[in-house]
Length: 92
Image (cartoon, rainbow, N blue to C red; front, side, top):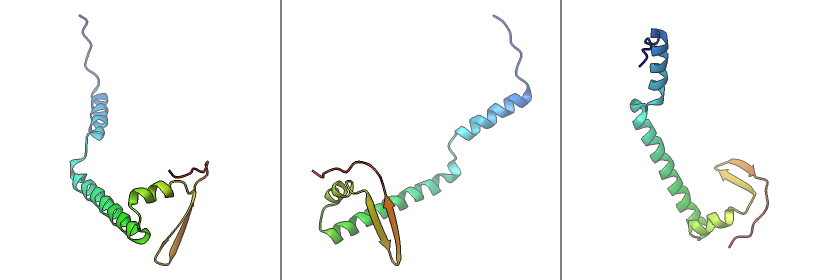
């Protein structure tokens, strides 16, 4: 067996810093969970609103809306247009 000398201190500190950044940040875990739950609750609220407005189940709406390539969303007095290029499809 050959003996190799230990790496210099600066190299050990750099590798420790890199390893530390790869670990999860537990003090931000609560913020991550709250953000996730906010998105889930908002998505469910939007889904229920769409079901109420269209009278369709959300599954049918998503299947049909997936085929459209230009969408206009109005929230209060603000309108947003979104366009996606690509082949059109026929909903099944």
